Length: 68
Image (cartoon, rainbow, N blue to C red; front, side):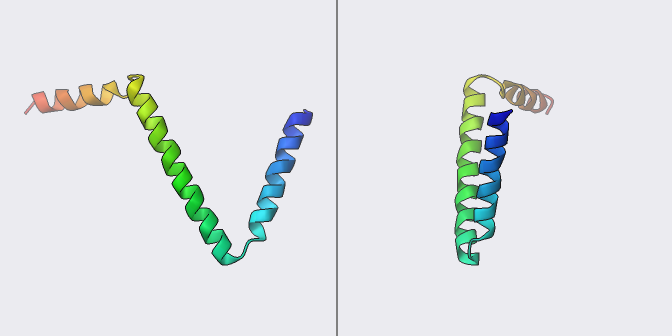
């Protein structure tokens, strides 16, 4: 379990660094993380769409539209 312990140590060090940031530095980091999260979400949606994992949504929408 050395790897897991090392990873947690890295995470704990990162958390301590974040806690030591000034308010402005924290705001910058938070905004950067939010943008990164948005980019990763968009990438995942695109990959899921290409893989056909979202086809059920199209099918449901077409079914609902056909009922009107």
